[in-house]
Every structure is written in structure tokens, then in C-alpha cells.
Amino acid sequence: MLTHELARTTDTATVAPEEYSAVTSMMAEGEAPLSDAPLYSPEDVGGGLLVLGLLLSPKPPKDR
Amino acid sequence: MSFADATPQEEYSLAVERMAVRALDALDVVGGADATAPGTVLGASTAELAAVRILGADLFAPHLLSGAPLHAGLAEAVAMADAFRTFPPEHVNGQQLSGQQLTDRQLGAHRPSDATVVGWRDWAASEVLSRCGLPPLVRPPAESTPAAPEDGEGRWQDWSLWMAKLSPLAVPGLDSPVHESARHGMRALGRGTVRAMLRRDYRTAARIARWLALGQASGLQSPLRLEPLFRQVRLFGGPSARTALDVRVGERLALAVER
Amino acid sequence: MNPQVLRTAHGVGSRALAWLHGSRQFGSLPPGADIEFSDPDNIYKPLGETALAASMVLREGVAGPGELRAAQELLDFTWVQFRAGDFLFERQVRHPMVTDPLETYAHFVRGGYRNRSLDEVAAHLGGLDSFRAIEMMPNRRLAVANANRVINPGYQCDWAALAADTWLGSTPEPWMIDWMTGYHLTHAVFHLTDWGARPDGLPEPVVDYLRTWLPVWADVWQEVAQWDLLGELLIVDACLREPVCDPQSWERLAEAQHRDGLLPRDAEPVSEDPRRAFKDNEHTAVVAIVAGTVTLARSLGSAPAAA
Image (cartoon, rainbow over all chains, first blue to last red; front, side):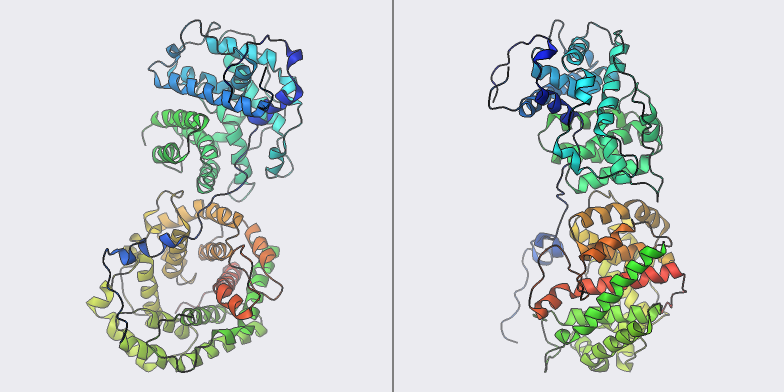
């Protein structure tokens, strides 16, 4: 992390090419390269983690 | 002079964030412009000048949104003039662009180059400077700007992403062929916004939505309700001050017309 | 829709049909399967879906003779699996509150089959207050209503109210959607329009809403290779009077489809084991068949044979 910056003169000869291109690329910055679109998640199915939306749901009997 | 281990990109990113925080604070103050105390120097270092340059017209958003008077003595105007001297347009425009830009999708026969993006952003900053009473530095780019796609033609994805890059132009008081195309592209802007939201690229969503807000403020119908949208970006969109600035500007514009 | 896209759409659908037809033995009910099954191997649902796909090909009649034959064989195969409907009848009698037997039966009715007992059960249940009040997701309620409408064309219900209860019916913020809601939305459209046979089944505000936002959802999920969901969104597109999605989407599906017709549901690697591959990707084949069929039918302007 930068803790201080030194005052600069406005002498353009001291600005390096990579500093110009940093400005350019930040001005022309595009969208996020990777999508984080919603995908399948078990929580989304059936109304959430609570089965059938009921806090207490009957356990299926072991034997019929 | 930067630390040996911080790249210009990293250094300038931090500086832009800090500059955006300043602009946000100024936006929140009633009257906007008075937030910057007289005698403040905004461009004390190369990084700060880079930040001013990158933010461009957004630096003046507090003034443009509140109608506060623009004049050559404003700290923002002094810094912007200095930034243009330190990073002249012909040097910034002519640079090789990073690989990131190469992932942008093609826009058919006339893909506006990123030099055109920079050209329009520079024009906007220069326009505001001339309102401050300083001589204009940049003419509008000569290439024709891409028109908003009609439904069924053109590609709303690429056009809305191009408009995202020009979000600093989405501010009251500026007009140009870009603004004209935005007025005809409310539906495409809406689609681009929703696409960005679903990709969870909240920054891009806010940038595109600013154009919707500007259009709505001038009486056009937005295909999206902007208040809940900007609120979602504000809550879900992460800590970036740049994003928050786009949101705040958009919210202020959206308030201009109650829907 | 331009002829090139139609050729692509038709190709995707017919290759998927060939794959489904060729793999149908993986979808047989195990011998002695009774109506008390919990379907741990997920056989029942795919059989119903296969019947759906086959019935759609037969309904629209826009396929070539080879495909029509394959569709007929698939429908016959699944009808035999269900013992000409008796299996479904027995399951419905044993479990009067479940809706799947009639939902499944509807596909066979569409394809020209009838089971007298199921017809009587459908008529009986359709008149019960309880049956109409069973707790279920709104898009499932639409599924049941459409199934009843197919089985009995005189079936009455308040379609507007059922539509209004769905997420889609509220035409909400299009950026507040997740993967599952995407499927709820597509299913709401399928049942309101009887799989494209009744485009008027969609309320006008829903049509306008879909025309604006459907291309966005298709773009977003296509970017992350959700081929199954993309296929369903393209079915929705074909249920509109005029398609609105980017025709490029069909090219993406064609690129993702394997040479043998298997269309992967997403970007995950497909299992080497053919039985596993069938189970994992059967749904996507059904989607591709229906999408290709309805897309072609809509474009050709053929009068759909509404039940």
C-alpha cells in the first residue's frame, strides 16, 4: 500500500509509456470477463431448505 | 514517484477510488460544489492527476447535478487542466491497449475502437472545462457513433457495453450524437442493464443504467424501474466507490422524474 | 425466421430424436415395478417426458417420415411401459392427491391414445374441490390445468387467475430471476399455450414482457453453457407469435450437440457410461425435440392441432 505520494511537476517527459497505457485501459475498461450468472442450487428447489416450507415435516414411515 | 512494486495500474486504481470517494462526498452535500474547500489541490501527484483524467467529467458530477456554478478557479477545473497537460490526449489515445479490451465482442463492421471511447470521454471532460471558462482541448471524435439497435437488428449487447464505457457522458448539460443514440436506445439499454445484473457485474449495470436514468429524466420511458435497481446495485454491488458514484448519479437522475 | 436457422433448429431436434429413440431401452420401467415406487432411479419422469416429445412431433406433423416413425415408436414404447395406461390408473387410484398420472396421460391423449378408466378418473377428479385446491407451485397448477384441457377439451378453469399467480404473471423485475425461476417461467408458458398451440393463451402484458426480456435470459444462460435451460427458453420463443431471440442461439446448441445427437444439459463432461449419459441428458433431448418441432411449426405457419 502507498503511504505517501511525492508532488510531481507537470513535465510530461517523465510520464512513462506504461503510465499512459494504464490511464487508457482504465478509461476504456470493459465488462467483467466472466459471467457469474445464477446456476442450479439445491436451496432454490422446493421453496428452500425447509422441506415443503414446513418447519416440522413428517418423516416417511420406515415400513409400510 | 511510485513504489517499485506497485504497477501504475494498481497505483492509479487506488487513486481513482479515492477521487471517487471525494466526488461522492461532494454529491451528498447540499449544493454539491461547496464540499471542496477553497485552496484544495486535487492533482498533487501523478497518480491523482491520472485519477482525475480517468474519472473525467464525473469529477464534476456534483456541480452538474446540483447546478452549482462552474468557473476556472474550481479545484476540479485546475486539476483537470493539469491532468490534460500531464496526460495529453494524443499520448493517451495512441496507446496500445491491454489484452482486456480484446475480449470485447465485435460490433459488426464498425466496431468503435477504444480510442474512440477515450476520445468521447475526453471530449466530455473538455466540454465541462470550457464551461468553466477554460479553452476547449478536445473536439468530438470524427467517426460516427454506433446507433442504438432496432429490435431485431444490431446487437444490443455490444452497443450497451459501448454505452457503459461512456457513462461519464450520462450527466445533465451535455449533448452529442452519443446522447442522441441513447435516447433512441432505451430498450437496448434496459436489456444491457439486465444482462449485467444477471452476470453479477454490478459496476457495468450501474454504468448502463445511468443512461436509462438520464433518458427518464428527460421524459423518456424506462423499461426498468430504476429506484429498486440502483438500490440493489448499492446493496449487492460491493465496496467500489466508482460503482457507488455511478449509482448515486443514476439515483439522482432517476429522482428527477417520479414514475 | 431465415431458412438457415430453421435448418439448424430442425437438425438439432431430429438428431436429438434419433438419440432418444436409439437409447430408449435405458428408460424401461424395471420388471415388476409397481405403483408404490418412489422412482429412485428416475425412470418414471423421463418416460413421461419421452411421451411428451413424441406427441409433439406427431401433433405438429412437420417432421420427415423417418422422424414421424421414430416418434410413433417412442410413443408406442412408452405406452407399453405404462401397460396402455393401466399403470397410471392404478397409481392415481392408490394416490388420489398426486397429479402426475394425469399429467403423463395427457401426452398419450395428444398422441391419439385413450384409456377409458383414466378418462373417467380425470372427469371425476376434475370436479372435486379438493383436487383444484391441492397445494402446489403455480406453474404446476397450470400443468395440471393444461393436462385436463388436453384430456377433456371442455375443461373449464380461470386461466387468467392461474397465470396471475405465477412469477411470470406478475411481470416483475427481470433482473431478479434465478435458475429455478427460469424453469418456472418456461413451464408457465408451455402450459398456458399448450406447448405453442395456443399463442393467445399468454396475457398481452406477459407477451410484451417476454418480447423485451427473453433475449436477455437466453444470452445470459447461453454464456454459461446452460443448454437445457436455453432450449426451454427457445421453446418459449417459439410459443410467441413472432420469435424474438437471437437465431445464433440455435447455432450454439448445434455446436454443443454431439454427433450421435446427445445434447449435453450443461458444460459438465458427459458420462462415458451410456446408461448414465442417458439419465443425465434425456431431459435435454426432450427439450431439443420440442424446441425444434415447435420452432419449425411456428415458422411454417402450420395450424397447430390443439387438443
